[in-house]
Length: 189
Image (tube, rainbow, N blue to C red; front, side, top):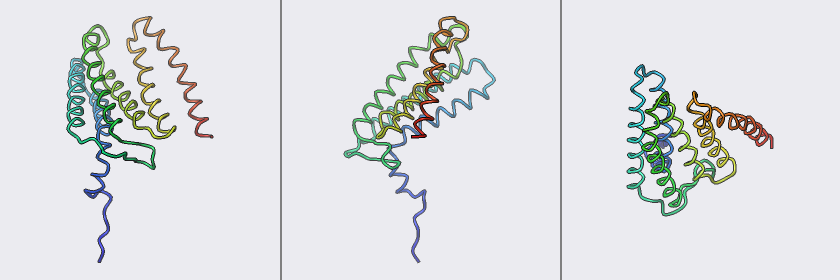
C-alpha cells in the first residue's frame, strides 16, 4: 500500500516558508482590523501602534535570521519570486515602516487622529510594497501596486476635519475610478 502525501505535509510547509513575511503582515493586518472594530476603548488605539511596531520588529528579526536564498525561488506559477535581493529590500521596507510608525506617534495622539485604521492601512500598504518587490510579471506587479497605493489614498485624507486633508483626498479618490477602469480593461485583454 502506497501512502499519498498530504497537502499539509512538512515538506510543503517548508517549501512555502519564504512566503512567511507576507503572510505574517496579512494576518496581523486582519487581526488589527478585527481587534479595532470590536475594541470598545478609545485608548486602545495607541496599543495598536505599539503592537504594530512589535510585530514589525519581530518580523525584521525573523527575516534577519532567516538564511537568504542562495538561488531564485518562484511561486504561484512564476508570479512571485524570492531571492536575496528581494529579501533585503523587504527588510528595508519593514524598517522604514517601523520608523514611520514611530515618527507618526505624536501626530496620531493629537486631536481626532487617534484611530486604529492608521496601522491597518500602513500594514496593507507595506504588504503591497512587499508584493511589488517580489513580482515577476505584470499582473502581480499591478496587484502589488494597487494594494500599496489604495491605502495611501485613504491615508492622504485621514484627518477628516481639516480642509487640507479633504482637498488632498478628493483627487486621489477620483483616480480610484480610473484605476478600476484600468483594472477591468486589463482583465479584458
